[in-house]
Image 1 (cartoon, rainbow, N blue to C red):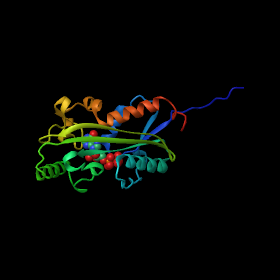
Image 2: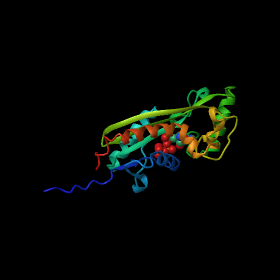
Image 3: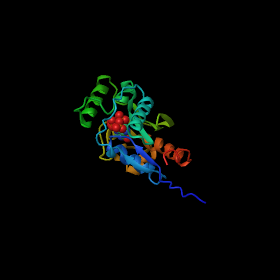
Image 4: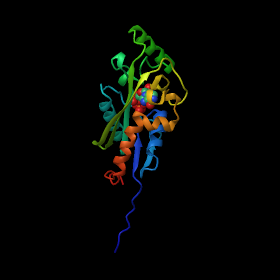
Length: 211
Ligand code: ITT
């Protein structure tokens, strides 16, 4: 006698409170054999404090926190902008740089002021994205990716989000905010990191974990 096994599509929680990140990640993961869920399904869950000093640790901590709170197979990422002449600032503080009330215009003004104070009109910079995939307490996959560029002479463009208007990407001779979403995804820190996650998921080992 054969048994009928109901094998539902496994779920994957994209654990971020940042809507702009969700848009870019969903685009990168479209078509994977997982049902994507977001934190909208847990409206009362507060975000964890991000206390670690590295993107990798913060990504792991966030993924572990949300996996424990929801019971879902969870991916979280930690990302930010490192400016060479500012010794890597704002780095892991990118989202909080300038304080809770600071707009991105305020953050840009602080950055240009700090660069002027150092006599550093031109500087290299990089965006970093570290991601971690966790099931229960188990870290299944971790990767990090960067995109190298320069701080633009002034903010330009209206696409993207966050620091994109001040990040000049030399191969395209434009800021990330002047790129189409597809162009940004093709070279960005997040695009590269999530394409690596897609390859890992499509290789299959996790597809049975929460089925
Ligand atoms: P979650 O922790 O909930 O994911 P968050 O926005 O607080 O949301 P992070 O702590 O990782 O996330 O901070 C990332 C910040 O780095 C983000 O808020 C932007 O200020 C900046 N950032 C990261 N990726 C960026 C991108 O592609 N373009 C522009 N700015 C980016």
